[in-house]
Length: 134
Image (cartoon, rainbow, N blue to C red; front, side):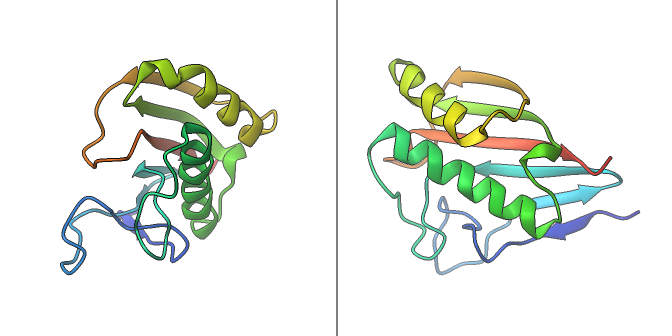
């Protein structure tokens, strides 16, 4: 199966490039039985602006963007097998983790969380994921 580009109208394509130019990034790509979802941040899908400075709000929006892309691909959070998280400030980890746990509502995934600097000012969390159709 050739790779299939997945695009959801309910998640931002990117917030890190000039909004007047098309993005070179795909929200997600399916290859075989796997879906690779590009890193999402706490951006409003319509305005592509950061929703809040609060890490809890940013985490929920980021996960909502991921969930919306998964839904367009016909999947749910139950299909996610791995997530990678970048936090600008590692001191935000407890509040991030609480919002993450509440959002996941008992769903289990593997996850790596590192301290890093997302590229856009005001973005304090970025998450990507891999999901399986199996």
